[in-house]
Length: 373
Image (cartoon, rainbow, N blue to C red):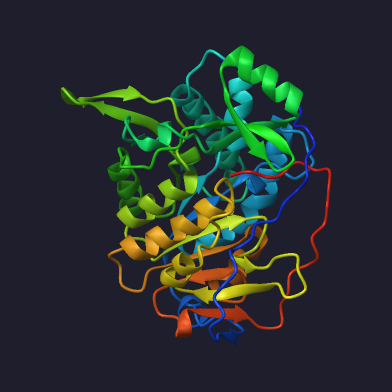
């Protein structure tokens, strides 16, 4: 398929920042900078870095190829600098792009659309990285899921643009879409089963081991969802779903035995009471604290999956001292130095340390559409 140079324009919405659930009232300490920085600043690390919609779609801009190229060009110098010091595998979201492709081709299934968006975004990122002296290799990655997962009973993955109530109802009736509220508006949702097996994992490992100067781009948009035929497990078939890229990134980082898994957003780290006078950002936090406070659970389509992915990696990694981080794309160097974002790790005094002297800005309303991973 030849993609048009301009996608349908995104509609307007209310931008929401992502919140963590309120923490417990137990005593906690403040820390500046995070102790994570003491070990990271001068050490070469194997990192899996996940970038969301902010990397390829600026808030308020139309989702066009030209704007994607421009946003990728802005992101590339930061990533190039990171690759010169560390061993990086890059993964990315595809929510806006795969949703727009679905509008263009309503008869196509999401496994095919996911593969198309992976190729499209991989090209955009590889071109931007090449302009900064880094050879990037996009890998069309298939990921096995359970075709009978409960995720198919309750679709949760937002894709595509937002709609008003009347347009949403018309699309639901005419195309059979599942549509759910997204703030004051509505968006299409599709099933998002968990990743079970990354089929191209050996190819990614080979690139890292034999050509470390190359940047693999893998598991874009969570990978192309496929399932194994029970009667013949070697036979694969596509699955109508979109895998959460943060969950797949966590599995990718675990299988690569990465030192860390970094999830980059446009909203900073994990905050308590964001937008309120007593807002504060977590500097370091344990998985147990996040689970105990149900952080991000109120936001199953945005911050919730990122927090859960960070927890999963830290708890499932076999690498001693493995950690995850959530922070702003522009702050990636300071995240590694422990000065920005939130680091998720197993050994944190009293479960959480707060970012000293930093409070969140007041909540602002805007007509710009929300960025989605």
